[in-house]
Length: 398
Image 1 (cartoon, rainbow, N blue to C red):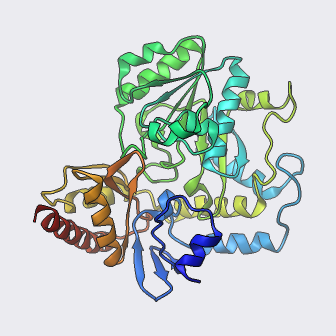
Image 2: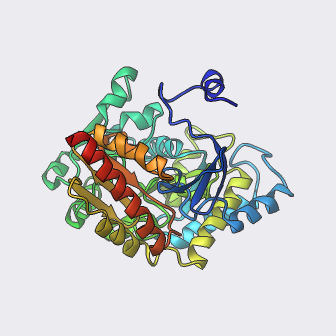
């Protein structure tokens, strides 16, 4: 298959995709059709936190394949893989997050969370944050803070209001007319923007005061990425609704929104089937997700995440870098312009390193490797990244 054939038969996200033709992937690495090996330093965009094709996940998939695949749209039949995963999540989360609803992706989880908040509160005003990213479907796009992504698809959802991330005073705009506030505990696509604990506690307090539901979008930050199972744990607050996806499935497509049984029950009547999904909670994906979570626990993968992230931050010390923002193994490396980042990206690719940039912060490149990366491997890739930065600096500065 040529790149031209790929472009001909598939819808594209841009007119110039990277076009790397993948042959296989295992652990930290991806290989192309020519046999070249690449360090995957973005985990398929925060998906493969335990690496590619982990043996426990593969075993769980095979085990479920021998039993059944799809049998009925979500919610009607009793399926053990769904139950086992929901029970596991309830045991890991705060007591008020004891009821999971499984969907297909992060954006569907966010869409459903908005519906749930409006249904439960009887209100329709929604607050979100500038520079946020919550997905590409209409509702998720409506609450995302990137105007360049949105302008061509208006009109979007009405009654959406935006605040500035980490600005405590602006929280006073939230009132008893507000259905919910959707926030990423760490803004991912904005280039790893980390809030203060004061801000997060003030946000929780304002939602309590007004009766607005607080929704945490942990689609990028969940399952160990930031150095705790969920990022919200580090801010000593918990949400009313939690959305998860990406790293939940261990490489398989699955998302979920999680809340209390009381809140979730509001989708059951007036009308019935307040949210429905044909493939949500697919048994194979649920089995993979449970194996993924158990792998994170059994291999104690979170314990060294912050230490490893700090090592990246220490070693990426080229004078052309403006700033490195880091929480756990979630990093943004900032440069003067997208020209720098794009140049460095392709130089990294030549050296066998897969990095990428952020949609809403394209003068920074992202690093989010599997949590399994070793300190030795971090030192190895940082040497190569610094070489790419030096080559780019020489070219741009003449």
